[in-house]
Amino acid sequence: MAKARILLVEDEGIVALEIKNRLLKMGYEIAGTISRGEDAYEVAKRTNPDLILMDIKLKGQVDGIEAAVRLRGELDIPVIYLTAYSSDELRDRALKTCPSGYIIKPFKETELNILIKLALQKHVKEKKMIEMADNLNDKVQLSRADLAESDKRLKEQLEQGKQRELVIERNYEIQKIISKVLRASLEPITLKEHLERTLEMMLSVSWLALEKKGSIFLTVEAEEELEMVAQQGLGGHLIEVCARVPFGYCLCGRAASTRKLVFSDCIDGQHDVRFDAMQPHGHYCVPIISEDKVLGVVNMYVRHGHTRDERTDDFLHAIADTLAGIIERRRVQRRLRHMALYDNLTGIPNRTMFFDRLAQSISLAKRNNRMLALFYLDLDKFKRINDTLGHDAGDELLKETARRLTSCLRESDTAARMGGDEFTVILTEVTSEKDAAAVAGKIIETLQAPVELKGYLCPIGTSIGISMYPTSATEAGALIKKADMAMYAAKTGGRGNYQFYSGEEVTFSLLVDYAVKFVMFNGGQWDHNKWLDLLLDIQKRGFELSDTDITSLGLVLESLKPLRNSAIGNMNAMSLLNLSATVFIQNNGGVWNPRQWMELRHDLAAGGINLNDETAYMVSCFLESLRELYHSFTRAEA
Image (cartoon, helix red, strand yellow):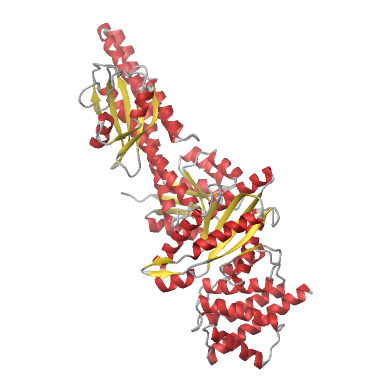
């Protein structure tokens, strides 16, 4: 099978290269890479790709949405939008163009691959349906012409011609029903609503000898059981009895287990469901199948003694096949939404859902004039356990943490994983700081209980920073920043405790902590872009750095490089060194003598950091760079 050819429209060179490499890795061919919307049409016309990945925000006068409209209208090439921007206005404008997909950057490779495959499959099916409709229309016209000619020649062939025309019109009506079902699948309605509407459309077909009642079942995931999702014309007792039907039970269950259409013209031995008031009737039960999976069953009623006919079989199979594609697409979309909103490891909300929940909670608190509390947590000993017992143990610890954390909360509250060992909690409807303190104490107590990992009882704990709406801040970003600052205060205050945001910012200590973490997390190596990202992150956290501050911070980072690669370059040692050096600089006002230097070395040794001549020189260079940064802050405050 030929590889699908993809045209990439992306104005960020690095991003375009990354996406291109990922597409090649997935097995696709690249028809071209362009950066301007103005060029998209001509390049697509020349290269004739199977699909276009279109960034919405592009340099130039034509953005991705405008380019996509022309491409879809004139070249009929499916377009998937990729964007790092997800405002309601931008999303609504993009969706009005009926794209083949829409994905937010950054994204996972599996998400993009699934979306591309679905778009290509959908485009092929749409082209086939259009081709079928064109062919059918040609047949209609040809048949009508034949009928007119036949009417002139042989009157006896009139009835035969009418029957042929009736068959064509019925086939055309089938296509119209399927088209309506497909169009309904694109509307913002639930799957249940869509199945109910499909059932109504099926029962409205005049030439089908169906009773005005029926039902559609869906397979319960991970179980061999059907659940009635949509019904029309059924009595209350039957709805209750047939709410759940095991595979192999009654006609619907047999259709699911045999994966074949089951027909009965009367209440026979296949009917396991019977009751005294049941009226004589028959059934068509058609399985909804996608590849190797039974997704459900369409159950239609016919009168007692009905004769099975091929036209009805074809119609019901066509509807079942159409529903199979729609149901499978819905399930993929649901999985993708879950992956986008929930943490894959712990199953609790991720950063994306956290920000959405926080915005909703703030809006609700503002409208009702109520308070809310935001907790920022990280685990006190996670790094040590992860390093000694391995990442599998670390993952189990994170999952157990999420479970314990949610057990301490109400249904109206939210626990989310921000990444690594950092978690957040949103407490709604709190009346005072005492409410937040009580929950924080409960969480600390719950997480202090040892966790058994690989046969070891591992002690664990957490430090919690708390900000309150509206006393600490009224905006989401400010609440998060201040809860994070409060958490740092809790950690520096001895760990295993909680601290409310007090409005005090130990900017020098926090800045040094950011510098140490930056060097450690980047393995002592970074480029200009990462350096700019660090400065932006520091600015977002409330620091206003002067040019002198930035220069001094750069010297601190450079002095940390050799320490990161030395014998004491592990996270625990660097964290202790960070705290000790920061306190040392502040207590001595950036000036020290040899005796004070030896006292610092003694304190480090007591904490497990023994300095040889080489590492002592590295630490002294680190202190010298800290002195410059400290003096810069001191002058700014003065």
